[in-house]
Length: 206
Image 1 (cartoon, one colour):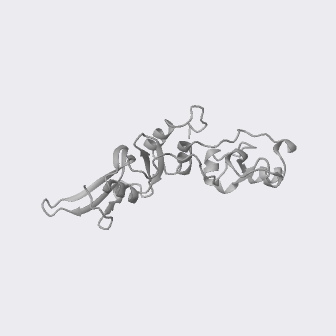
Image 2: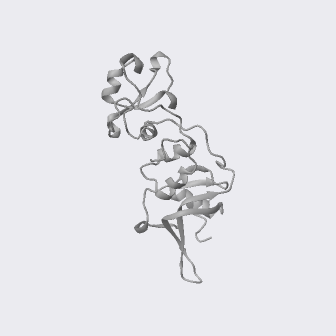
Image 3: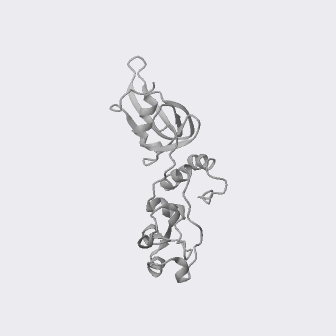
């Protein structure tokens, strides 16, 4: 291995890396599994679990010095890596609902007035209010600006003459991974994830 089996002696070359970049982990069949930190990626390499990599180098990690050659070990971490092993070998099918991912799904647009807003000006609106039996899940929530949410209040959209700009949907696992890291995703990573999006996905232009 290029690096020590421990993280204690590892150093990071920040000059050629996005310090907040995460690495997309795939299983050996090429299905996206999760985002991992650079530290996790180094551990996967150290355990010889990385089978292949894709994409540009997002970070270079330096290890110890070889007493024989006098050279320092280095490991270039690519944007995408595929791993063996049993941990998270299959993609999950239960994307966790959060405002961050929801607003990204709806492209930061109010699904009632259609206008784009800053994150702080958006709210999670339940199409069928929870007080009237609605559920807090992907199929019953949309991004709504504060004004539209307040106007709709505890009513159904049709009761106040409002229409949805687009229907809500539950993202696939690949779509969900793109949503939760949309602020830091690289071109290599989003291009790969799009190959796993449903054909009619609204997120192909994310």
